[in-house]
Image (cartoon, rainbow, N blue to C red):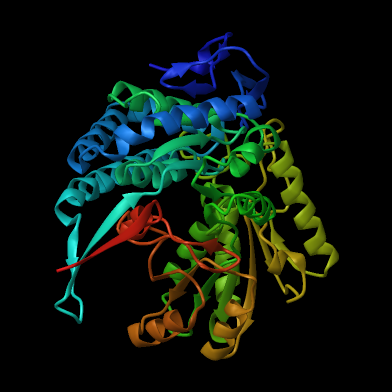
Length: 486
């Protein structure tokens, strides 16, 4: 099995035509819990990107014309390979990303579920191809084909290694596309381990190619490459804009999953204990490094005092520490840059007059690693950066509201529209609020459980397109109608 963290050799980070390529520039990969070096990974550049794209282009004809059933069986074997290596992947995920081991286990289970889901959809493709289309004239007949869009580029982030990759890669392969994957330069090790499992499952040469490296060296030339038909990107809005601009040069398809500044709304009749649990989970899971983090917490005036005290108490009781220590619930941020970014946001919140209820600093006893204690602000100004900007750290801001209409207005007053959570004992009230929110996913009295069967993506600046479900498969397909005279 792949054990880069145990080796002093350079880990190959470029795969072209099922061959790992040596040489090229390297990058250092670190353990955010200890700040120690985990591995040195070889990377690519624009020339490497071109080799990878050419490999994918050469493999496209055979792979795109293969039976959906064949592709589905391969995806099922990949899922089984991930299942068999679950413990190792969990360990690698926690070492490279810093998330607690239990969270890493949920990530691996998500990868398995996603590949299994798209294995089933791939098997169904053959039976639905060339389906007839009803026309108003008996003089013509028409049929519909769904065809893979071509070579696709997938650029994935560091906050959910393997997971975001599976969300893109499984439907792309199911559709019959060939792929060039760029993992995050911060967390390439779990991704490379997943790729090796895919190779062991029998992936044909050139169907999946991998180029590790920075956004400038790899992401930019990949986004503008003329032979890439579609690019799917998950990351920051600033980089998403750059991806769109480069993709526009050759008018290629683009799917973007970007930022969020999501709300959790606690209505007057909510179960207070459940609301506290969901607020802390929504704000502090994965150290708050989620585009779906419900970092805006809106609480009915009648519950606000009790809610704030309970959230503060719960946040202070969260066990922060090394992901492998028993009982740890919150690990470090992923690297120094992210730690500094979050601490800057916290300082801005204080400057803007927000009241710091707890956290806002490094926990005592954790002198190494990029740790920040769970942080809770109240009395947050509507025009402050901590209320409006995505922080991507363990920080939540609480505001009061006097009516559901005010809560809806405050939640919708955002450049983003990814997710929301509503807490209420009255299902009619909860559904009314859910239906009024300008977001792509709403949970009612539930944690942020994501199923492969439901779409992922949002409104406004949060997304272009959707991932998961049949919509995730459709994102990698082109529609073709064939009309003939009878």
